[in-house]
Length: 359
Image 1 (cartoon, rainbow, N blue to C red):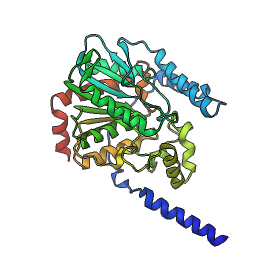
Image 2: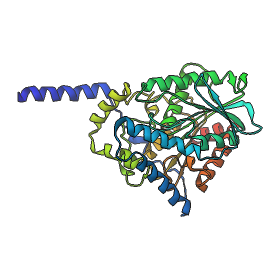
Image 3: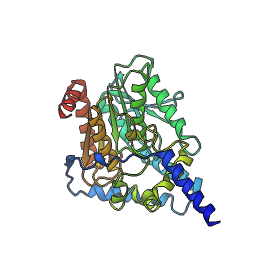
Image 4: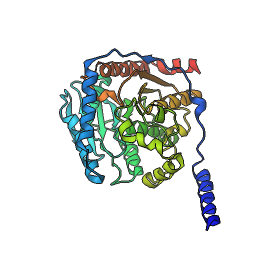
């Protein structure tokens, strides 16, 4: 019996090694990235209070009931936001147009919301999409992609790909070729964003003029140091995902494979682990204290090393995807102005030139 158990354990170990082959990416740690300092502000306490309300909304619930409560609470965040944009619903692809007054509809942004691939919607992220439409002088299409667990992870990926190709030829008023294209997203949607621009490159489709990823997940292997080191300093992700640090990584990899039906080392799910050459100008925002910090730093360092113009701007002590708390947080407004400046530099051709000079 003992030898049988040892043989099974050995088989599992070998299978884990052969199946996942997790490459060590620590060579991309330790890069010095400038951090924007943040002064104490009463608005920060208000944000923390709202995050606690999110936890209370699903407290005591389990399974599907807990997920539904979380989804409803996230959507309620968007309902309380005053937007200046016109909102138009779209059936195929499913989503909504967010159109600020006077924008050029030949300029378009595909926005992919976050929510751990299981929550979030165009409604929950209207604070972000409304500001994006204003700052980019563009019509924003907020994609309502299929979520887990009702759908497979790859269903959401396919929705992103379909939406991008559709947006190249369709605006809010019908068929109209896009003059300027941006792909953007936050957290899980940031992962979809970075995965999407690699797929666009590999399939010879017109690349977006720029990409923006806010606090993105880039690596589902959870091997980055900040996934463990920043649990206590991340008030949003820490209470929800901090417990994963107690589970051995190989067990998590098998669990991810079972839930996502895709290996955590697959670049579709972990864009950090793919080819990062010849990508469009990309801006990444992250907080110095969030669990996903090193997902951003590693991606930016690796992309630069492989020749792509990627910028990483970090803020001190911000919550995960603090942008959604605009206009309450002054740092959210600062972040949007940073995005505006980045897009202006892209249009002037300054980003690619600057990035090449740093390689």
